[in-house]
Amino acid sequence: MDYQNIKFEKDGALAILTVDRPKALNALNSATFHEMDHALRSLKDDTRALIVTGGGDKSFVAGADIAEMSTISAAQAREFSALGHHVFASLENLSIPTIAAVNGFALGGGLELALGCDLIYASEKAKLGVPEVTLGVIPGFGGTQRLTRLLGRARAKELLFTADRIDAAKAKEIGLVLEVLPADKLMDHCKAVAAKILKNGPLAVAQAKRVVEYGADQDLRAANELERQGFAVLFGSEDQREGMAAFLAKRPANFQGK
Ligand code: HXC
Image (cartoon, rainbow, N blue to C red; front, side, top):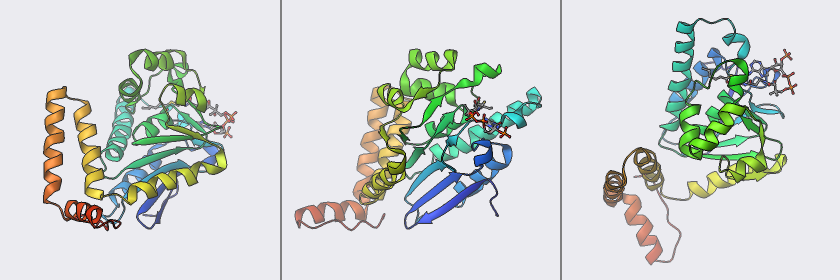
C-alpha cells in the first residue's frame, strides 16, 4: 500500500509510525485510519517495539478531522467511532511495547491515539487535552474510558468538561505523560527507552504487557492468577533458560524470543 497520510519506517527491530498530514496538524481522517490499520497489520515478528509520533514540528495529532466530521450523520459517526476504536484497539493489543512521542498538540483523537500506546513521553511544547465538548461532541475513540482508567474519574472529568489544553509539565504532574523532554531530544529519548526494552527478553516483555493489560480490568485475585500463569508459561521458553544461564555465567543474555 502506498501511504499518503502516514510514514512507516523500520530501524532494525524498531518501527516508527508517523501520522503525517502536517498541513492539517496531522488530524485523523478515515483515509489515515485505514493506512494506520494497514501498517499495524503489516508488522512482522522481527519488529519488537513501535514508536508513534506526528509529522512536522507543531503537532502530534490535533484530533479527528473536523472537516470530515462536520457533515456526517449519526450513523456515519457510529462507523467513524468504530473505525477509530478498531485501530486504537489494534495498537493497544499489539504484543510489542508501543511508545507515543508527543511532539506537539495531542488533542481529542490525538490524545486518544497516545492513550492507546503503552508509554507516553512529551516534548516541552506539547499541549494535551480533550476539547470535544467545545465542538458539541465527546471523545469517540476510547478517550473517555482510557483517560478515566489512567487518571481516575475526577481528573478525567475535569479535562473532559473544561476542554482545557494542558502543558506537558501539568500532564506529567497528573500522570498523563511519563517524562517531558526538550523538543529536539524527544525522539532520542523514546528510541533510548525502546533500545533498553529491546535488550530484554521479548517473550517476558510481551507477557508483562499482557498481564498488566488484562489484569487491569479484573479483580486482584483473578489478576494475580493471570500473573501466575504468565510467569509459569515463560519457564517453557529458551529465553528463560538463556536469561538465567547468562546471569549465572556473568555474561549478557542473548535472547531469541523463543
Ligand atoms: C481538521 C484541523 C484540525 C482538526 C487543525 N486543523 N486541527 N483540521 N481537523 N482536528 C487545521 C486547521 O483547520 C488549519 O487548516 C491547520 O490545521 C492549522 O491549524 P490552525 O488552527 O491554523 O493552527 P493554530 O492556530 O496554531 O491552532 C492549533 C490548534 C487548532 C489549537 C491545534 O488547530 C485547533 O484547535 N484544532 C482543533 C483541535 C480539536 O478540537 N481537536 C478535537 C477534534 S474532535 P487551514 O486549512 O486553515 O490552514 C475529535 C473527536 C474524536 O478528535 C472522536 C471522533 C469519533
